[in-house]
Image (cartoon, rainbow, N blue to C red; front, top):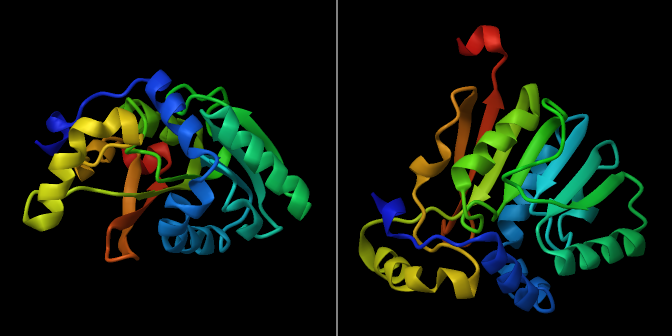
Length: 218
């Protein structure tokens, strides 16, 4: 399995990596991820109600959400959250209910709190992706959506070769280059309704899941 080759990062490693990334994130990876972020927000803006963005980072997506949505953001990095808060104030974003420093694998929100839960470029960063997926499922309301934008690795070709070469440096770069799709397909109540390759070059994928009510899932 691809997942077994990836070294395990802990929360301290993630915080340390993103402390380094925070000053330059918007102009580096933020630019690479722009197309995927834009596509995900476009989908979310067609929905109603409350949105939880897990891994809100510097808040690049926050000005793009429709004003009819109520947005809550969490991140493990206080340095990233400081930049996100400044963005909220700069853009006068009244629909952002709050930002919280929080571990995505142990969310403090009650069950079924949000109509939409989105995690963009998060699953390859967190130390325990399975626990994070279960938390996303837990806080999503029945009939709501969980949306992932993420890099999923491949076995073959030049890209697969480069991903395996980068794998030992996960702690330093702050994300797993080797990460299989199977690692997020673990929640029985989340039914995948869309899988879409995103720019640039299909490097990232958007997955949309609907959380079925218990009577449908069983």
